[in-house]
Length: 165
Image 1: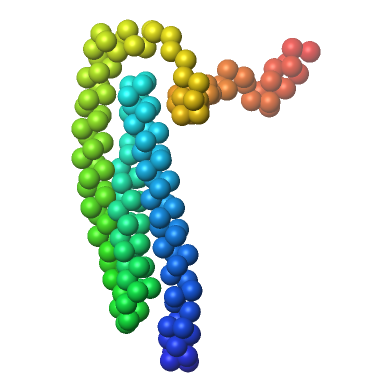
Image 2 (image 1 turned 30 degrees about the vertical axis):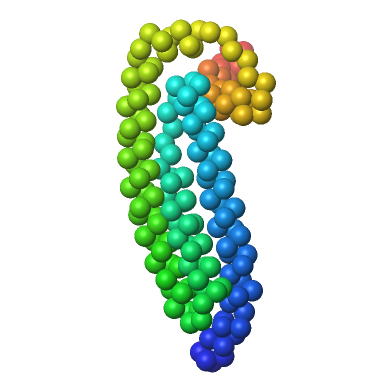
């Protein structure tokens, strides 16, 4: 039973590793896109958002990608599959460490920039950015809607109406 499972895995591993490689590339590209979006938001609006999660994902998926390519290219595929997992874990730890360092640095820089008088002048200056990136930045700042705490719950309003009658 175990032997037939290993034989099936060895025969079909190549068919699964090519999509895994492509998914790793896609995820790294999406993380880089999100990092560029955060960079634009930070530079334009002086807003800090933690980015270490993107760096951990980049490290993890680059490690998995390298291991998956080794699985596709070299013999002893199960050994390289195990190495892909190890490379993913190592990439995760390196990415998390680098991401935390960058977050600490940029958090200090943004706090200094926001405290300066130049930040006040830049915030008050009307600027219209008509690109898609500018629209995303503007929408990202205004995504926090105020909580609807002013309205009483439906049961409380019904109790007040019956007491008035």
